[in-house]
Amino acid sequence: MTTPQQPAPHPSDSEGAHARKGATLPRRSATAATTRTGGAPDFAPSIKQRIAGLDELRGIAILCVVGVHAALVLDIEIWGVGAWAVDLFFVISGYLICSILLRTRVGYAGYYRNFYVRRWFRIFPLSFVLIALGVIASHLTGRTFHNVLIYYLTFTQNFIEITAGVATNAPNFSGALLGCATLWSLAVEEQFYLVLPLAIRALRRERLPWLICATILIGLANRYLFFAEDLRDAPPYANPWGTHLRVHYLALGCLLALTPSTKLLAALGATWLALVLLARPSQFLEFVGAVVIVSVVARTLSHGPLLTSRPLAHLGKLCFGLYCLHWPIVAVVRDYVPIPAALGFALVFPLSYGAALLSSHYFELPLLRQRTRFEHTPAPPPSAQANT
Image (cartoon, rainbow, N blue to C red):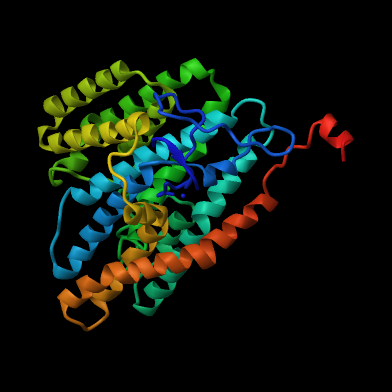
């Protein structure tokens, strides 16, 4: 989130784009919005324009997620790091998606259509492949999946664990489809992004920061007051899956896109700290992590990358595939392949990287190129038509 480069979610950046125009934090430089013939703003440039430093942050985050899950092969549980990484994904994704929507909210006939077409082509194909594999694996291993399949098909799988009866209404219930446990975060994003475009298009620009602040406060109140029992026996940095308990991270990213006000962020931070200290002191580390995450992203947006690394940036560009595909590899290596645990641990990352690279080049990107067939293409202006 700094100076633009070229060419992503989410995790996604679930959207995968590093939009520059529409962000309001101070920048060292800015790229002009690319237009199609006819001068109307287009979603396509968001795939090509990248903000220096964000890919590196996502590269770090995906290494944390894969590393934490790979450690399970050795029967080692590392609390907090994976949750911190997902929260970083959420903040970056919120910033990028909000920036894209702000850039196209006025005078663009394809606002809704193009946004949702892009989301579908970026997120759903690989997710549905993973869900199909999960159904097959569950069937082959004799695990129940009928009671949870509808959640995955509607991207509400993050509510499986907290929905009364789902975990007890069938034998051999496994909680999540085999290999699909990490898809909970995609559900959080898709639920949020189902509503965000409507709000950004409907409200005046100056009112949007207040709506986002209200969303953050509601998320914090849910987490530390109304649903605090969910954290009673949780580790110091818990990671409940419900959207109502995670939405504030996506909203924080949106706030970075909407306003450069550090006073507003400071006020929200003070409120967050007060809630933690008064209602749930055991979750203080989460507050610290949130401050670090928002500060790092904001610093990257305003002053440039904290570090420059081609390997990390490369991993950041592959983070969606790595995020989706590493968990089934962990599950297979840990539970179904009779090899030493140390060797299984060592194999997780190269196998995940190879799968993500193949998926990106031969599945995800070819499908993304097809999305233009379904997007709204503005007609050229009369002057352009006259010259053809």
